[in-house]
Image (tube, rainbow over all chains, first blue to last red; front, side):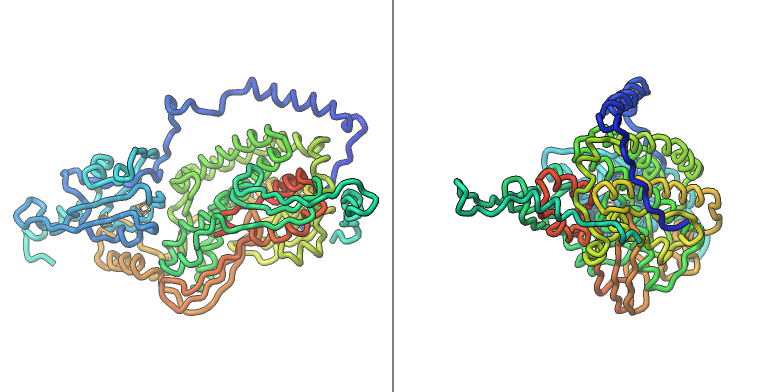
Length: 179
Length: 416
Ligand code: SF4
Ligand code: SF4
């Protein structure tokens, strides 16, 4: 329960000949030869990815096929290596999701800059950007390594939504004066 | 402490150094200069040693550092406190969880913020797991340096299991970015603590098996015993910390001497060496892993419930996601914390934590608001390497390899 000086071993005469260590070392090795493999035959075998893994950042749609991002640019602001570039755009008022008002016109994530920190997902107020399971990205050119909006939605797919924030807003607007 | 032991092997060293060429000698001899690194397998990263050799004996050794300099301290001045967390991963990248914790505690000390017991316990747990992971790598790499490959393989098998645990906890194997100012990235997943316990149970026998490959190994002892001796006085004078300081017989451990994050509740021993050579530094790391497992088991046995972040720090820790999605007030609060940063008072603070490599310190000067005005990092590897010019002189080149291995430094932290 305090500071303990470590005991240094003194080798016996036999140990100093190095012979017992050879025997015991071989014993350890033999034991390990017959124990199960610990390596994977990547890429045929893939490691299991736990939930909450921070892979390649992607954009997701809600179950109605609406893009969730409202281009608030908070993720662009927080991204420590400045990997995200967003050009905000308007949603026409007569579109079915016109009440959302904004969506990104362009949304680029430079995967040569991204450090997979997950801060974008953490700060997003719309649950629109997620780091999902894909962990390896490759390309022949620098331009290929920039994920544009279409690619981001393709990677992201649709995730369930438990809040339906904008559907509620639309319903509220229809039923009476909003805000 | 162990002052009665003779720490000097200078007699042995001077016997090795050849006499200067004099009148009676046939050949003119010349010193040779040799660069080891920055890309040499035994310099563990990008350290370069500018050596001057007399035959195979070093007469001078100048470490050249800075190959991995990224300007982390300056980067910190240009972003909010939370945005800097991923950069702390990249200091001692062998134990990112411990860095995350040290940084978060330093900023919380500035904010005079207390985090809940559960948060503290999780941080202690992760820091000790990081210590085991770091020492395993230190041991494995040391083994390779002196010719014991198997140790490295066994150590890496265990590190892989730790990485699986880190991955599940934080979402990343390597760059964890787990701490936040006032809390954590997220709570521990369901059943995770049980898996940590299971890891500890299976780890101890394997640790003993791995250490048994080295502790009484004649070749390993020949390479390390009496090599790179550092006296306690020198160790203190050069600002050594961590296992390198304790290997020299100085029982300083910040977890005991200046407890933080609830370390005072746990019972553990501080192992110290008696001779201060490479072998002692190896022994200290081996024993520290056993002590870490002891701490982890105590944390698990008494794992606190409750909040895992400081709930009342509404200007520091972002509100929960479902609130942000449903309530205007929390939405604005989230925007404020992200864009302005956690709101901290003006002032100065220094905090250092006992990291696997030694005392990692953060000195923060704040003029108020969410961005540090100055952030200085005291990197243990930097201070530990400063003794190389002294300890390497009179050694053989092959001893330098053993000394570097026993120091277990990381250049990401040294160069920052
Ligand atoms: S992804 Fe989220 S944080 Fe980023 S712009 Fe879209 S809504 Fe805002
Ligand atoms: S994961 Fe981090 S680095 Fe990558 S885009 Fe998101 S915030 Fe930027």
